[in-house]
Length: 305
Image (cartoon, rainbow, N blue to C red; front, side, top):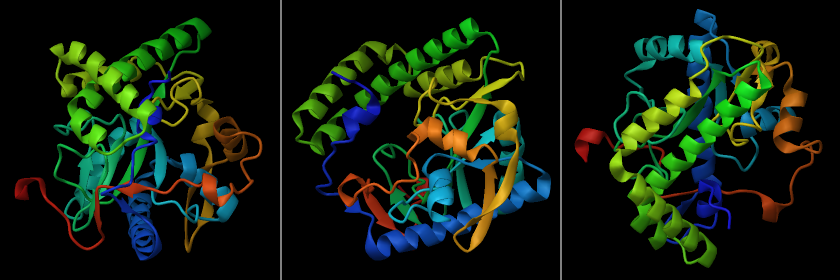
């Protein structure tokens, strides 16, 4: 039985949750595009490199903007660029956004950065302990990895092992909520098994597991030929790219604005989605996002409970 977090959660029931469609989806997308414009402004002003990634890159190439039924925006930055970006963005737009990072944000169990819009509310399944539940834009760090095939493989195995431990630890913390949201037998079994493993791993806090996993992802300090996006949809071994290819990028149309996309977009999308990535999936195979709560016009601050 597969025990990945994705497999354990993909059958979560939408009962008691909000499906983002119609006007809700349109409002979410409008706000996300404003957020991307702010992020892009700081990057362009300060010479910070980034690229659209994941489904956002796919949408840019296939649809000229967001995938029509999609409700998130993903970008990737080299770790050194991300470290420069965060203080600059806080300085420019801190009054409008919360910024969550695994290194700094208490109770934040994700391995990527989220910029979340104040004055909005979008509470996702993993937002069970935090209170800053604004609409999120995701920033995935591109980490150094080793030129040596052996060392790169060892790096990947270490990261995957730590990520599995972190996943079990998160499932343990969220067990009752997740079980209450699904009746699918395989998903419930996966949740229970991972929660049991998470109990064994409870000798360290969720924050400690998160920091330890990030430390593994950042383990390679040398800027060599390869980079990796350990927190991406392809996990570690499906997200290894040549640094030079990801460093080169140009502006492409994105809805009624523009954004940066790697010049190696075709190779990137083939690696992530397969050779037929330009084919639009049938309606029954399109993913629709269900969230615990959504409101484009009200936010919930941590100190307001």
